[in-house]
Length: 534
Image (cartoon, rainbow, N blue to C red):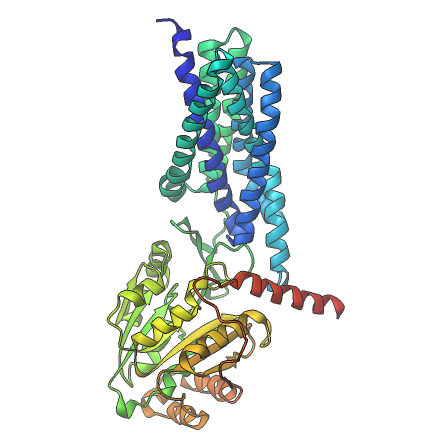
């Protein structure tokens, strides 16, 4: 059988490969941007929108070029060029993205950096190869249609094989390539597959110099694969750097402090541990210990806690350290990312004696509450998917109603909200939503941070400031070496809490409508305007 007999199946394979290439570039490209710009809806909108626009343009121009020059050799050059583009993106995307994020950038300016930086990187590195891949399907239809009557069948077959390739390009990189090798090697491998296919086609169906020329397309992806395996943040301070099923995870040490960061390239973190200490020098974790002080040890033998957003288990360590002498502490912790839990076990002692009564589950916090037996004295919600953004389903009316059913009588729900102002629309919406369920909430701005503690109690009002301060003097708590530092922070902060009841006409977040990112971004813009005016 002559090689020409294999020409038609080969063209269908190219349709599959083009579809897989587009989705691999999208999935791996977005993940490669995450360490620098996060993975908010805005970043994904930039990636998806820009690539869809490049595909549309590629379809249109590809059709016109195919009508004028319907040659397989030109199609193979296009395919190889897309492979080169992916291969070049693999090593260069990270350093260019890093240049878009100035050192020491403050959170108030992060929205603009994330929005425009991710768009710029997408336009430079992802749009060109996807545009070229968009030119492939019209070429394939033109080459496969042996007559006008067959054009519909050819288009249907090309679209079908392309769709199957898109499915493979969505699941295989997400489930296999990215967790095993990382997003940048996944880009290089995708480029290599495209280049090898172009080279194989040139060898089988081409002539003379074209065979050699097209095989040169393989070189950039190979070089990209060799270079792209390097760490995003190299250096002795980095203890761990990995791609989990959900995100980029890094653990590093600096000046005696150990940090866990997820996705961000800025000087922000999700967990902080200081060597030899339980407290974190005034970070918001320390102030969350105010909530257990509302309970009276004389009337409660145990303290059953659920932590939604466990991360490295810093708050769990503090509860064990300060309140184990007062109660029999039992903690259930939900952390959706198993990669984070593994990092916490290796570098933060999550499974060690300082978290001795902790059951850590790799699952969504709302799912943990829905399937738990309840009876919690405290549900602490400290979950952030992109540093500043709380997952919307953890602050809706339905979620707080679930929390209420899982609390023991007199139990409390506390939410850590990162925001810039006590009057911001996001904080007000969360506060009012929680008040709709519990009847009233207390809000406390945590000193020296952008964090607000929003909490409410089931069936009764929270303890008075005097009762909380009296709890600080319990002998078992006072005996802890860091008790005085904790007392200093709680004494100062408790007097600044404010009480809020449901407001008629105010926004209530629901599972059907919770535009949390948009509300918080409005707060970013307001703060930025005030900074610029000053």
